[in-house]
Image (tube, rainbow over all chains, first blue to last red; front, top):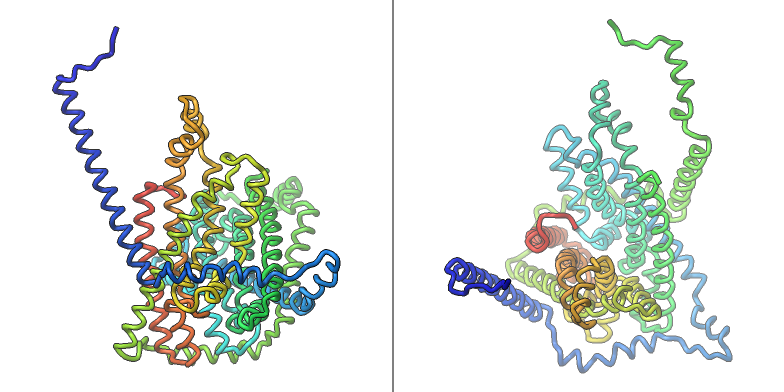
Length: 293
Length: 284
């Protein structure tokens, strides 16, 4: 038995034609998308003043810069060299600790704010639409304006120091967490809510006993993730005078204290990695708690 | 007929389910310890960070005046408005091109860092750690470094966005590659395809939609970050934002913030549309 196809069969020719036409249409669509994409790239290249010549001429400065920031560490005098490299360790550690505190307090304040607002913003709990709309727009505003812009404004309002940094991070965190929290709330099991409503519980009681127990571990996990992001954010708050290690970093970069740049950057990177690692473990523990493992 | 519970019945019920109602002592103690620790650290932080109540109240009073001064948003003059819109275009260009270039560069790196493509543990470890290091440095710091290399201007900003995204994309791509279905790859291998064939026909069709949606998401979030790199002189609207805030031209500040908000919202909307077009109506 053969499976030969009769090429003259009109049904098959029609089918093949249709296939060819659809493929041609799809190819045209892909081509069009590629053309639009390329046009965007060219436009963006013009907009961001991309200059391959300049890049080629100056590219050697990048490895040079990185090399210059490297300290001279000789094997024979390793301890002394290390000491010279990290000459400002005490001051930097203090600033780093301040950075962590800024991130922590900003996260706590932002999480509390997000917690209070997320129930109003969630579409399955709110009763009327106006407060929900207003809350959502407010949260959007808080997370769309970059935190460093808030920090710039707050530095003028509150004076130099860590306080504007804390507030800037808190506001940004509130915007981001309010949204994430409200999405968690929207995904809850509504049966406990119905149950409590049936017994005559008010809005607050429903939230306290039907919603919060379901979402708490998820909230905590998001707050941890946010803390990690905020440590990164707090490390640059010093650029605009809002406290933390960024203050010394920007000074070192601007004044070309090369080895200081690498020393401080390394400190920040190690801290961020340690916090990454720690929060990830905690989050996994929290999420498995959620699944009742 | 009433459904009220008699007092002894109620007491018996409570006694029977005592553990369910009260919870175990251990959980209670650990909850108290954790919450106490968190609150303690919070209070300690508040005191060490010189946050006096007066300072906060005075600051908020100041903020109130600024907000009043910000209204209505006004670019100052028509010429200024043109400059601002041009800067906004520069910002979007920086974000777009930086993200695209980072994605192109990170694409091969992602394969290098994926366990199921390159099985060598040393390569895997080195690729992952170097990407972590690149990612650990904020875009603003990269911008400062690139300003030292190619000089002030949007080109430095574009390079900064590219570098900081390289780390993020490398990690995300390698994770996407690691979570693919092995069956298409084995299928390609079973008909005699080589290693490159496996990647081209077995892996890439699976990861491309995921990668495309991540790149789109990053373009959006980079529009936000590229609004600020102008603060260190790396081009875009951030330069004007920092300048107008420092010179206390509050109406222009609010105009700039509104511009940024509008741009981010528009890009948000567009990229959402495109993402759903690429991956279908499902969450990633």
